[in-house]
Image (cartoon, rainbow, N blue to C red; front, side, top):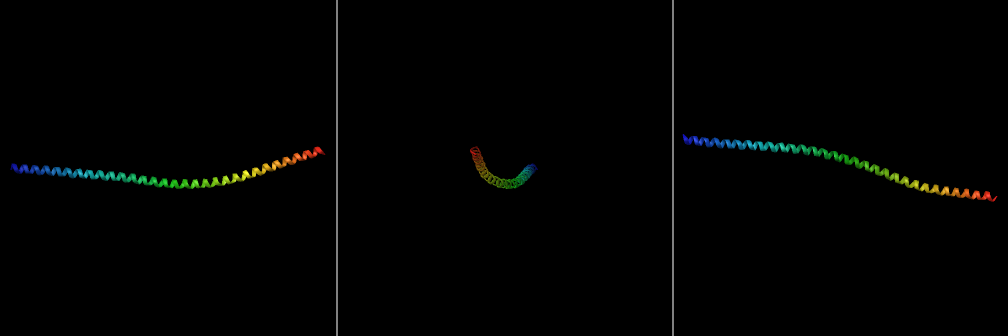
Amino acid sequence: TRQKDSLSEKFRSKIDQLEKAIYQKDEDSRKQLEDFRTVLKKNTTLSKKVADLEKEKIKLATELSSKSDRLSILRNNNKKLEGRSEEIRNKVEEISNIQENFRILQLEN
């Protein structure tokens, strides 16, 4: 009976060890699953942020293009105004010369 008790004790000990190992594996698996879920949530969040940033990028690119077009128009208008300013300066100089000539003619008469 002592051998049986000793054998039974060994079996019980072995069964306890196996149960602990199974429990530990279950815990490890649960932890891995929890970690996976956490990573999946973070990945989903990051994917949403990337999508939002892509939308913002498109919006900003459109805005930049629009402002670039507007800047081109303003530059062209500025060149036209510079040309008109030169024309006006020339006309003012012509008028001044005519006035000066007229004044000289009045003095001579």
